[in-house]
Image 1: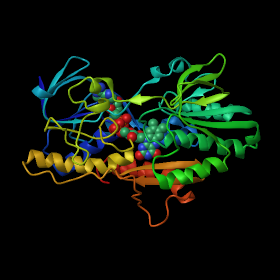
Image 2: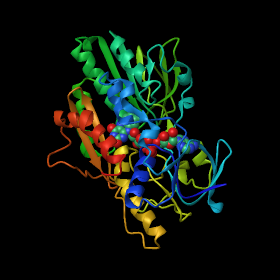
Image 3: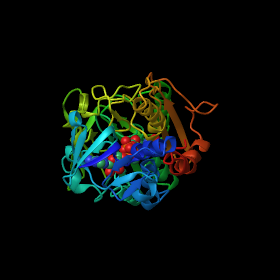
Length: 394
Ligand SMILES: Cc1cc2nc3c(=O)[nH]c(=O)nc-3n(C[C@H](O)[C@H](O)[C@H](O)COP(=O)(O)OP(=O)(O)OC[C@H]3O[C@@H](n4cnc5c(N)ncnc54)[C@H](O)[C@@H]3O)c2cc1C
């Protein structure tokens, strides 16, 4: 049986960032990272890929190139956890023991929860930015649409980056306008929730953006089925349970998401199936040698890479304190950020904390749409990600 001092589950944004920070802090640590994929993707770029600004390949790197030197890569997937025995089992049947465990396998995309979606996505006007395999179809269907209805959805429950479903709607609207065909296209944005954005300051601005663009917003609409033959989207109204049918010519679906099944079915899970950690220290509420961060964690903040940038240093400091028998002092304040693209040259950089209060980086009103912030998203943040965050530097 393999044994490592620290085992990290998931080599995505969170797993790699934490591995790099731990190595930087102490190169003598024995760290293994369990990750099944050959490729790592900078998913925030998929919004711009869907809008035709970048090609899908630009968002990816070889997984081997982002794993920090000195960290052992176990190319396998975790199947079950045995936290009372300080060990886990992989899909290939390996048992791996650990002194400390960091759980960061991200969020699970539940394509199956919308009937007909799995079969139709990528074809006949049905697209989604939420997978490297389907993000290319978004730009294809936006570009090909010359008239009719362009429909954009947001499901019930947590999704990666709460503003992302809207971003592609605004980019598509801007594309139709710039192509001179906006008056021939009905742009509809549906959400299962009651409003466009959770934080008041940014919600007001985004409502104005949607109104200015003539986007028809419909709330409490939860997509349950796609009928590709008749090009119909079937919804359940969240309050009345009534069935609503909207005809589309293209539809961008944000699929339902949830905690990964292997986490939800384990003893590490808390409410909703997420890894049950303390919202300030990121340490597990029942297993003292287990930590979690990122999309798979129970942290009650918006699930973004930007949030992980602030979670990772807290987790690393607290884990090192546990290893050296010191009290845990680092605290995460719930910071998250969502750069809401509102067109091909504008962006609202929402940044806020657990209290839902803006926690802004720049010395100007970030609730305003700005070209400079669009440039930050397009060029600045990807560079910061590959060269700073994944190296454990920022
Ligand atoms: C369209 C879109 C737009 C977004 N926009 C933004 C944005 O503008 N700003 C922002 O900050 N964030 C944005 N995000 C969100 C951001 O990408 C995620 O929050 C972030 O990647 C989460 O990191 P993570 O490490 O928790 O999960 P991931 O980066 O998804 O990594 C999880 C890793 O775990 C691995 N894994 C899964 N199951 C297992 C298993 N059983 N065993 C071992 N490994 C496993 C996976 O292969 C994967 O590599 C966006 C995401 C999308 C899809």
